[in-house]
Length: 246
Image (cartoon, rainbow, N blue to C red):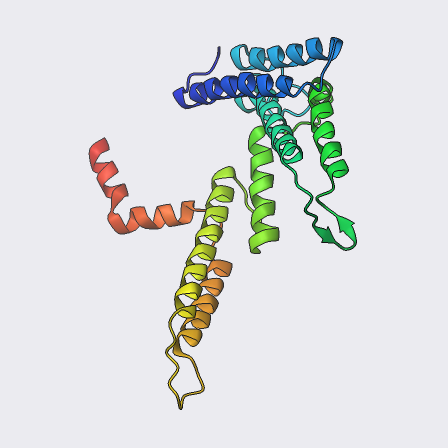
């Protein structure tokens, strides 16, 4: 009710639809019974209410007064945990007799899958208590941490300072991996080795490309604002904006 941005209004509408849809599918699992069904519906209603009406900040908020990121926190976490529970439940439903043993432990064990699904469903019931105690970070903080850790532990990236930088750094790493994979597949299917030549030309090109771009990515900043400023300076965007102001 206090939001003046059309973009955030669209986000709130999208989250409200996601809460309703995921809540219906979670109830269709048949895990909740009796009073827990009522309590789950109350949690759904509280998530919808937090999107419609400004709320008092909880201990997780770093802003005094209205906080738009905190307003969508309960609905975001409710939808995310519900989607995870539905995915695990689908895996449990269509699980075959296959096994994946790593370090002597079967990671496709039906008992483990059932335990994970039940843990997600129980955590949904504890969502209001987690919000009151300030255990749920703001949505932007959670997404910054998530993109940063994926980029660091999967692609070897560095720390980021904002959500835009986190998304940019993760997208840059994914595009680099896709590009390197395409070059490697192309080089694998082309044989440029002569009969009397012990070296492969495409093999050398692939490794030279990987080393060059890896060094470039390791030395480039994760904040895209520098590239945006460079683009404005090269295209004289600042001069055009100054002329328009005059």
